[in-house]
Image: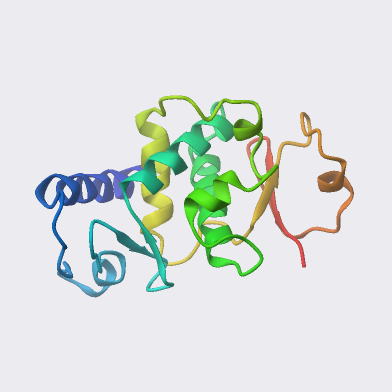
Length: 176
């Protein structure tokens, strides 16, 4: 179901970026669900039902790189969850307010630290990002995740976690 939804969203997004490469895009919608997703201006997509988060193609590419670097080998749902964590951080006052700033925040993602961000993401990673974007609300309501088997940060193991969800090898959680 997620894959089918992401395919539709990705086709719509690709068409938007191809049809309107440099001019302002008017609000495009045919029903209430797409109305909240496609209130587009200057090649951007509104996320999470008018949350104030707008993404452009560079943001989507960067998110796909993080999804690849952090969750290759994980189930598809885990990839969507990683993309949701990025969006949740952009939305959360405790984190920077853009995808680029969230990704570049010191120590935020191991794939940035070890240079694995410089990859070419596969189609599944883009689909996962599109599914996270298409959600009316976050796929997981978490701002952190880690793989307990390989994590090098002690604080993640020892901190009190809320809203804990395990998908594949990753544990997704929130702290307050």
